[in-house]
Image (tube, rainbow, N blue to C red; front, side, top):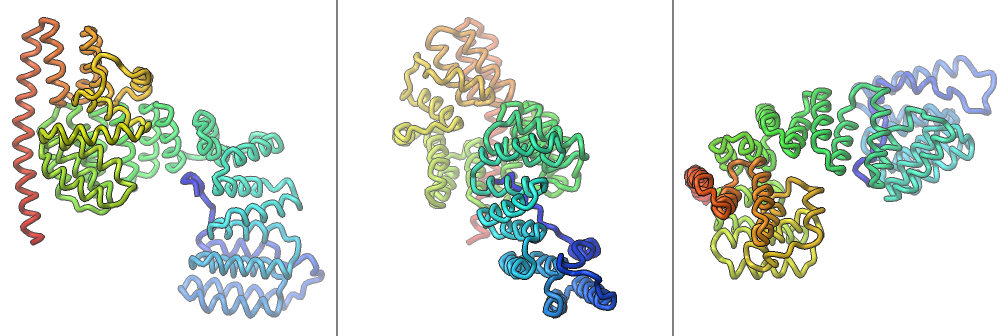
Length: 504
C-alpha cells in the first residue's frame, strides 16, 4: 500500500454511537414502526454502548447479535456490530458482518461503503473497489465512493488510474474541497509533485494547518529540489503539533538540507530536549553544528552517536559513518561487516562505507577492488554516482581530466552533493580551470567549514594560484580541526572499549 494512502477508519465507537443510531433507523421494507419495539432497540443500543465504554466488547456484541436475530433489517445495528470488530482489530470478521447484513438488506449503498472501508483495512483493495463500484452504480453522486475508489486504486499501485478517476470527479462535482486531498495523493504517487502541491494548498485553505498534509508537502518540495520550501512546511507542521518531536526532527532535516545551519542546530537541540535521540538525528545534528562553525560540539555529538544502541541496520550505518568522521577506520570496518551481514538489501550501503573505510585506513589496493566491483554494478542512484566519481578520482580509477557527461546536471539538481563537487573540482583543476575548481570547493566549505578534506583541496588550488598565504591558513585550520578530531576519536575509542568490557 502506498505510504500516502490514508484509510479513514472511524474510531471512537462510543462517541459515534449516538450518530449511528440515527442512520437508517429502519430498513426500506418497514412502515408504521412499532414504537415499543423501537424503544427496545434503543435500549439495547444504549446498553451496548455502555458495555463498550466499560471495555466489555464481548457482551456488547452478544446483545447486538441477539437484537439482530429478532430484527435482521436494522442496518444501523449491523454497522455498529461491524464497527466493534473493526475497533478490536478484526476487519475480516467485520467484513463477514457486513456481508451477512447485505444478504438481508439488499441494495444498501451505506453498507457497501462500510464494507469497502473494512476491505481496505484488511488489505483487500480490489474487493473494496468492487464495493465502491456498486455504490456508484446506485448513485453516481456519492462523492465518498469516488474518493474511496481512488484510494483502492492507489493501494493497487495504479496512481495514474486514480488520478484520472479523480479528475473525472472534479469535472462532475467541480472544485469540491473534499477532492483536493485525495487528488493530491494521486498526483504525488504519479510523481506529479507540482500538481500535488497545488491540491494540498487548496485543501489547507479549507482547514487549519494539518501536520500530515504539511509533512507530505515538504516531501514533494524535496523531490522538486526546494529544501527551503520543505523546511517552511515542516516548521508549520511542527507548530501545528508541537507535542510531536518527530516533526521537530523532520523540520531540522529540511533546514539542514536548505543550508540554514543555525536554525537546524536549534531544531535538533529542541528535539533532543524532548527526548528524541536517534542515531541519524545526532549525525545530522553534528553536520548542522559543523555548518555553524562549532566543530568541538560537532565532534562531541558524533561521539554521542556511539552511546546509542543499534535497533535497525540504518543505525549501524550511522555508527559506521560517525566512526569514519572521527577517523576510526578499523572500528568503522567492524560496523560495516556487521551491516553487510544484515542481508543483501544492505549490501550497497555496506560496500560504499567499506570503500571509504579502506581508503581512510590506507588500504588503497583493497579500496580499488571494492570501487571496481561497485563501478561494474552500474548503479544510477544519485547518491551512489556522486560517491563513486569522487572515490574513483581519489584512487586514480576515474579519468582525471575528463568529466562524465552527467556530472554538471547532477550537481545542478543536487547542489549539496559533497562528493560530486569535490570530484568535479579535481577534474577542473587538472584541466587548468583553477577558478572553477576553487568555486566548487568553496561551496563545499560554505556548507561545512570543518571539512578537512575540502580544506586540503582548497589549499592545493590556492597554491597553484600563487596564493600561498591563503593556502597556509587553510592548512593551519585543517591541522587545528585534525587535533580536535583526534581528541574526539580518543574519547570515542575509550567509550567503545568500556562498552566492549561491560558486554563481556
